[in-house]
Amino acid sequence: MPRALFVWLHRWAGLAMAGFLIVVGLTGSLLAFWLEINQWLTPELYPGPRAGIELDAAALARRAETLVPGAQPRTVYLGYPGSAQIGMEARDGAPLLDFEYIHLDPIDGRELGRVTWHGLPRRKNDIMPFVYGLHMYLAMSGIGEWILGAVALIWTIDCFVGFYLTLPAPSERSRKGFFARWTPSWQVKLRSSFYRANFDLHRASGLWLWAMLLVYAWSSVFFTLPNFYTRATQLVLDYEPPVWAQAGTPQTDARPPMEWEAAQATGERLMADMAREHDFAIERPLALYNLREKGLYEYRVRSSRDIGDKAGSTSILFDSRSGELKTLSLPTGHRSGTTLTTWLVELHTANLFGLPYRIFVCALGLVVAMLSVTGVYIWWKKRSARLAHVRRTEPRPAPAERTPA
Image (cartoon, rainbow, N blue to C red; front, side, top):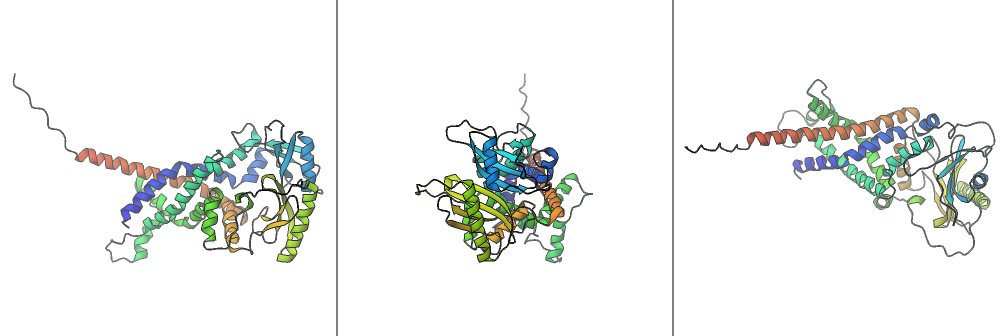
């Protein structure tokens, strides 16, 4: 395939992605310090841990019910130190809520604040959730995921196209070896012209960080196009998609779903059974979700199979009526595709290797934005030079002859 075609693909892919990658790069830099920024911006919502015996998920769900009449809990998340996040929704026939989550003190159950994760921020509590929404779906549920999904796919392909374009052209005639001719692609000549410095910065940064850029591009496909990611992964690895990416199944059981207390007890029992059967240790509970539309409960813990610095993704799904176990999801050591996906997700979310890696991810987000800006600048300068050349070389019309008086 002619090299010129790859240049054309890289140019137009970069231009199509530039604005979106600037947004996700800058917001990703902030999200690398999600908890720290939240604790600084809204310390009342994220006060940090304190001594005491924490309430279980069922007790916190009941507490949220009493605080918000006419609403019912749908999720209980215990992964934030000193703050339990309860997802709420209006009951049938009740007016819509003006918030989505209520934060409670996990020890005494008192309310810490309320948060909206969709729409424009209306208060300090909503700022970081809005940044998250921009990063994950451009703050436009539905269409935003599709747009960023297309960007993620193009980005993944363009990683390979861009890498190819850094290689020495096959037609080059030189006595130098391959690596000697490739070396300039890794270097930035800051003392050269502004255009040349931008070009070198664009090419060299993409090379030095190529592996991580590919990790972020492909893991973005997982977040935005889970069905495509699932099919691609299942071609080569044993993989089952996470519950949020699975379609619901029709419910034929006429019995009412179990209450929060029964679901809590069932989740604890089933998880303990799975821990014995699959030889892992349960470290602490993390979440209990009532997936009403699927007729399931999800119970999540942090276990010895989790690799992230914070939280965890060891979970089970069980029928909300019969209590029958449906699925066990272990982050590592169970299915090869799930293990790979866990590493991709934890790398993407800066949940590995402590503070140094989070600083690196924050910087990487800025680099992604920089690559987009320098790419657009390179295109603009080349286009301007090309147009100037056309203007200089196109023939000028001959002056009109004067007619004798």
